[in-house]
Image (cartoon, rainbow, N blue to C red):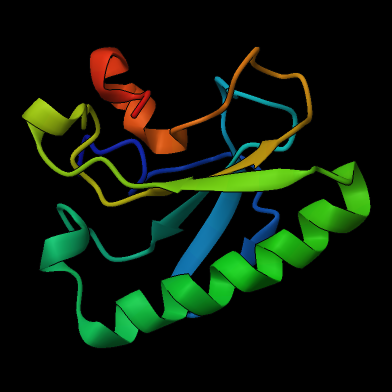
Length: 122
């Protein structure tokens, strides 16, 4: 049996297709933070098939609709960590869909550029 936590998930799924499922992140950045996870073990986004990447994109839109109704966020960040240097700690592809709310950070300018704080402002 695989030791991959996403291959053996026992958490309630909030959305599911034949290729993937979505769960709320156990350590959410904001209220409604969701993970989109392929059912098949795929190391990262670049190892995913075109079909799986297409299904991920469709799922992002579906989950946005669900989160809009439930939490009414003001924006979203979509993130994928690919490789150790990029911060990947679970080597099973997963996409973060993170609702954003006015005032959740003092100045959101630069968005995902904040992964390297000195380069966030431009």
